[in-house]
Image 1 (cartoon, rainbow over the protein chains, first blue to last red):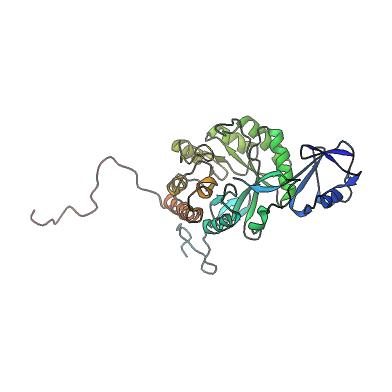
Image 2: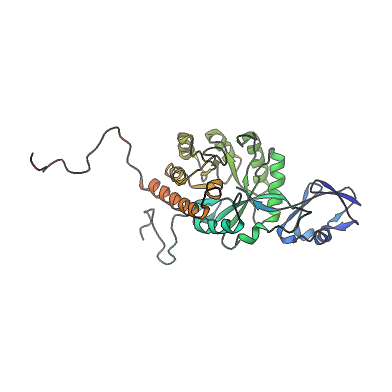
Length: 66
Length: 273
């Protein structure tokens, strides 16, 4: 299925949970925040929140700034 | 110890008894520093240590999906030692800023945000209308909002009314190093502010930070002045001392400036008169 990941099209086998997506991308879930179709996903929901065809996902972390 | 003195020190811990308190949270240092533009993460970490700050601000950005090899900023910030303040830098609308603040809250461990809503690319001046709107939304969602604003009393008042936990007027454009351009505006905001006043942006060197504190600011936030200095670690220490010196001078109460001289030595008993 095709989703939009951080603004770009992304091809992935699915549907899958946010946890599964983070694992697939080798991202430490404790250091990021995830937005699913414009709503922030609480960390406790990562195992349940399911991503489907056409969904928009944003994965952010902290970077240097002032 | 003498609590009324600006140099009062806790006899047991040796800690300064002049903390910065924002929304009920106590910070030992009145200097808040950024995490951007350092030559290396290691220099940043050492500069943070030298600055004596206990709050650092960070930006919220998309994870690089294609390149996961980059080091993480958080490997160089000890959360036990530094309070991490996510910011909404480079957001141009209240909507973007609110969205970024919500993500920052989830990525971090607190509901604090340094709120920036920029209105102009060249100057990075704030869009105060959007800023007040975003402050209102985030305060309603339980955020502790520290808004970066123009050095304008009326805007600061609107931010207070919207529930901001502090007001953070600029001294000069972000990263400009011009120092405090409108001293009197900061003085006026100081006179009327009911929440902590943090001068955010524009500091170029130590005397700028000292001046901000002498004007009565409760704290100073800076990034480029330290990160961009030829020796960031030494500049960080200079800023620590400047903020402390400026604070003590403010509390001590300076003499009024006068046009002409007043002799410091007695005029009587001069030899040969």
